[in-house]
Amino acid sequence: RRGIIWMDGRAAVQAKRLEQLLGAPLENAQGYWSRLLWLKENEPHIWRRARYIAGINAYFRYRATGRLCTECSDDFIHSPDPELQALYDRVLEKTGLAEDRDKFPPCIRCTDLVGPLTRTGAQELGLAPGTPMFGGFGDLPAVYFGAGCAQPGTAHIYIGTSSWFGEFLPRRIDGYSAGWFTASGQAQGALFALTTGGRAYEWAIHRFYRAERQRLGEDIYPFLEGEMESVEPGCGGLIVTHWLNGEPAPLSTNARGLFFNVTGQHDRRHFLRAMLESICYSHRRSLERYTALHGRGPRRLRVVGGGACSGVWMQMLADVLQLPVHVPPNPRYVGTVGTCRCALIGLGLKADFSDLAQENEEQVFAPNPDNRAVYDKMYGVYCRLFPALEPLYDQLNGI
Image (cartoon, rainbow, N blue to C red; front, top):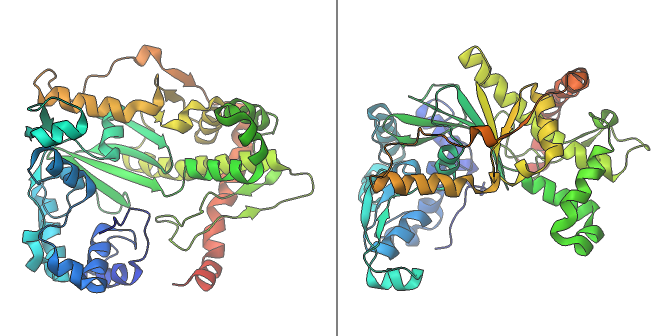
């Protein structure tokens, strides 16, 4: 059937029932198990006929090699971590999904050899038959590893269509992060996700700079850098939230975008900069969770993804976080770097993901202490907006 992607929030009823069954909130309407239950209950004909239920990554591996398997970061049925497997087993039993366990392919590690490319698979990919294919992974671990997040005391922020703040930990910690994935038996990815990151930037460009976008094409971004540089930090008291598609906890799927404290002195430059500032504020909240756990900020914070190409945005982020921001060369391609390292490990050419090069080539954005006071003030107001408006969001968008 058509894929049900991570942004899909139709499974609110199932998420609530899952919370009641387990006695604790485990995931929201965009969660994996909630969407599985939605599929089983709302499309039983699909569920009954399906020999296997797997994501697109597993399907591609199957088409390429003839072997159907799921890599551990993309598997919520099997885990190399005994504690996590116990949780998965409990969820499956409580929800009645345990009877369908055979529908889910076996689990592999990202560096495991899946098999050689079949002749048909190689022909479709334009590669040689017999080329080795490894487990690989989805975008989350690819970016984590490519950003050099394997070192203790490091963290990173990714800004693409979505956005997140993330780190690796030896094991999951209850109550710390709203999202996790298994990188390996020894590493769990803690994820503080934003549903809408760079997409909010693109939305603002389309709404406020459509003519310039049509005229300049990709050259619009240097023009917008100048536009935002001409606006003072804090945008004269304006807050524009990036919550266009709902957001994970501590917000909700009912949250929506907001223009707050607009005056006659504000124009489209302020709207654009304030949108990016709101993404920075959301990451500051995640950084505070990190600091509360570790007793200090990260030793090195890398920012990657397409958003990291904006020098104005990176300076803004450093000022809001009051922390140096490190941007590696070619930040848009760190996922490719992580995937390349995965293959090199699988081939035996590298030992693990810990080696990090190019630190001396990073661009570093140091926080400007002169902007601390205004961003402290704006951040305090930002954090109070959703709690104040949550009943109204529920009234408009359902519970």
